[in-house]
Image (cartoon, rainbow, N blue to C red; front, top):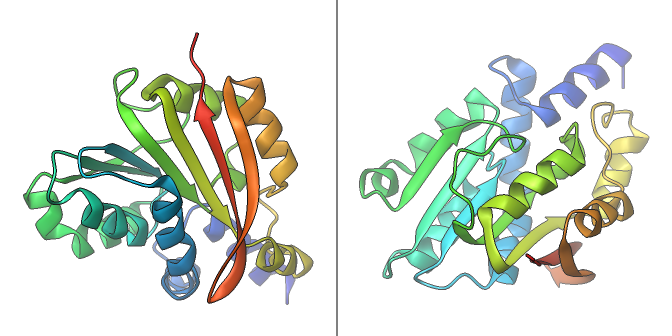
Length: 213
């Protein structure tokens, strides 16, 4: 792959824009991420009354899965995104859920979350932490807004990520799971576990529990 194309794809993996590479990445998200998104929600074990946050929701596949779990209860699904393209895409696919006030989306970064302390029961993200410029700052914010003993989940496909990196398309991120798990531990999360899962494809989950003094 040419250096210019690799650079543009790398940039849009981190934040899809309104150009042709952003369109390509958005389409690939829909094709490849559904299994990871649905299983992140499953591993979270979201209950009908839970308040849930997805960080970096992309086209909204995980939000849709989470909504199905809270639609008959008092729960809420929230999402934050730094890509305007992804925000508009998710707003279109979740228009009825947003109108019913069961889903709320915000354009903002994980480094400064617009939520009160101890607000969420569950937080999940998919193909996201690789691009956080300051893992510790992000973890501190997630720790702040999650309830004591709240569950944090991410899913990832290490085999696919290694392939993307081999094609020089991971120039803007670092998917090293050990680096991520050490950041979780440094910032007060416990019960940190990585597991292999098989559902159509083989992939991994990382789970952690918020431990607050």
